[in-house]
Image (cartoon, rainbow, N blue to C red; front, side, top):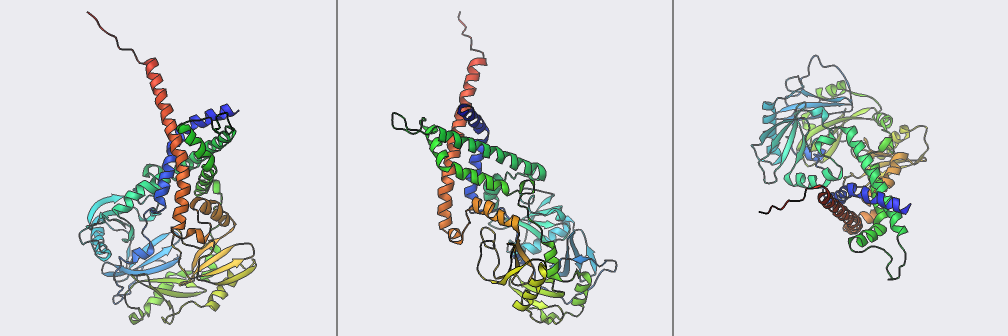
Length: 490
């Protein structure tokens, strides 16, 4: 039995050990570098100060639709409204009353020059062509913006950015540094090359089955390593020498940790729907209290006093909260002022208003607490992903939690039974962020480096042994099958 498992571990390891090494080494990189992403706050920096003197003209043939929210901002020198529905984003030119459904390369170049200047990226970005998907857009959820116009900026950071052909806005941006570390980190760690990632189902199955094989390989190694551990006449506990000895002890010390990282990594793709969680769409609708429609935006802008705009506002966001429309006035630095949609006066969220919404979200569930949260808790915290504070936290007897944004009152984050399990079985095990004290730097760095170095030692020694075995097999093959050189004599 042990002999059979040893052979399985040996030959399975030849095929998988290099992948495990890459996962470990890219894990070091991902402690400090994530997949490039243009956030909403970063996008604001590329917008011009909002001017509504030419507002507002509406297309005659545009039908009223249900909206999630609407955004009013400048597109080059014209105010536009972006209507975010659950089936796409529609852009209307408020100065001319036109529906903007497509941007060609020429107009994209003009928009890119304007955006580059506002982002501080020079004034002459170079057009690199239209792309459907490439390495930095394949997993960013940009399908509705395709094709994307790619531009290189004239700046020391080697910035590249992408414009949407359907909305004309900048939707992705990367620097040379982000691309370099992106290749060494997330692209390797997630097995994320474009040719594979564009086929989502194939990519997910690749992750699932390579991880399952890795779990099987590691479990066999732990069993064999323990079975071989006994005191011998020379005082040694291991029968191995050299690199095999290092692999034996590294596997014994860090094998269980390797199992937990492989298992938690598998959960990241929610295999077979595991820990996928529910959408909380019903709760989001109850927060709105009424469906937001294009008519609301038209009525609001018909009487909107330009003087009500705070200084340096670059975007107005319209959302429904408890049956009323509210506006968020955002500056390029990300500051937000909430305005009442009827009086246009500042209207910050209050606890009584949030309490009233909290009572409606899950009428059949027992509510055990609702309050402002100004510090992170076990489920709402920043670690690689920034979470805004304060938020309004609603807790239920069944363990579910709902977090409402402290500025808008909209659903910011939610936790159900599946997400609670994912929090501890994926995030805590995989990222080591199971407690606030451990997440503090440099405590987290020291802990993760120590653990990851141990797992890497087991993977590297296993890979080296596999390479050596393959080299010996090649030499044996050559000696057996290659013809022996013939010596000619006179």
